[in-house]
Amino acid sequence: MTTNVTVDGVMQGLGGPGEDRRGGFDRGGWAPPLVDTETGDHIDQVYGGAAAFLFGRLTYEIFAGSWGTMIEMAKRPIGVALNSRPKYVASTSLTDPQWAGTSVLTGNVAAAIRDLKAGTASSASSSPPATRCLRPRPGSHSRSGSCAG
Image (cartoon, rainbow, N blue to C red; front, side):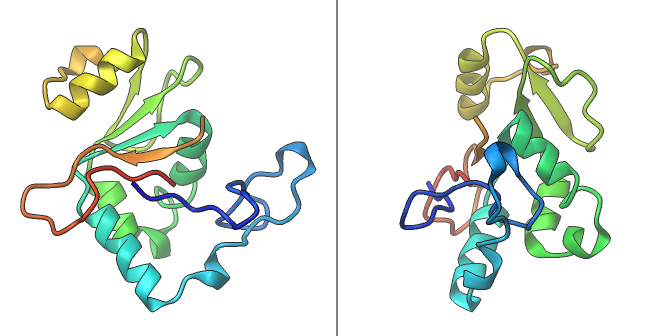
């Protein structure tokens, strides 16, 4: 499992200055300047090794508005993975996801996630901000079976 967090515990607004301004947060975009080649390669490997992605609604909306729509981002390894694999969103308010390959998990979300991880989910079972790679793709070299970010 991986996550992006500062030493003092900040996980909010890591991608861009205006990404998540809730609560007056004004330090958005803190992560990109810290990503060196080794870190970038690791992140590409984790996302590239995922069979599917699990999001909370807020993170889904941020990702859909960037990785799902911006051509320059969609061409990068993370964008290729995100745009070519199933995406699941745990949400009670999202009803019509626009990002291709997205299903909304409703009802017993914990059971739906267990089914997804076990590979037994049916399309009928899917209609806190986190992104999770549910399991590695067969043959991937990812050291983690799930990731959060």
